[in-house]
Image (cartoon, rainbow over the protein chains, first blue to last red):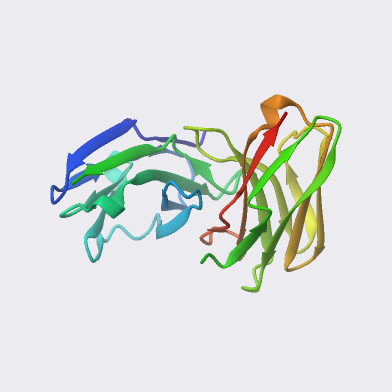
Length: 115
Length: 112
C-alpha cells in the first residue's frame, strides 16, 4: 500500500524560530518520488521540491531544507528563521511507480507563524 | 500568478443548475488533473487526462463530467450537484510520470 503520514496536524511557532515538518511514507516500490507542496490561505498548491528515491542528498533552498532518509522512510522539511508568510498548510506527497494514483498526499500540517 | 488558470474563482449554484469549470495551461504539459478538496483535508483526485484521453476516473459520480477539448484546456461539467459537493476544485497539469504538478488557484464551489 502507498501511504504518507504527516503526524503533526497543526504547529504554531513564533517568528524567527526554526520548525521541522515531519513526513513518513510507505511504499514497496524501489522507484518513487517525494514532493512537498505549500497551500497558503488563497488556495493554490505551490510546488516546493521533488526528490527521487535514488537521491538521498539533502537539499537547501534559502530558508528551506529537506532531509530524506530511506532508512526511516522519512522526508522531513525544515524552515529556518520562520516568517509570517510561511503560514500555510504543507503537504508531503508520494508518487509511486506502481498503481494508478499519480500522487498520494499526506493529510497536511497547518503551520502558523506568529509575529 | 499561477501558470494554470482556473475560472471562475467562485461559483454558487443550485442543485438543478448546469455549470462548467474551466482550466487552462500553456506550459506544454500533456497530463491534466481535477481534484476536489474539502476544508482541512488533502486534495482528492477525481480525474486524470493524459494526452487528451481520460486515463483515471476515481469512481466519481456521473454528475461530474470532465472534458479535455485540447492539450491546453480542461473542463469539468457540473449537473444536479448535491450540497456535499461544495468544495474547492483544483486543476493541475504536469509532464507525465512523476513530474511536479502545477496547480491553479481553484474554484470555490457552493451548492445551495
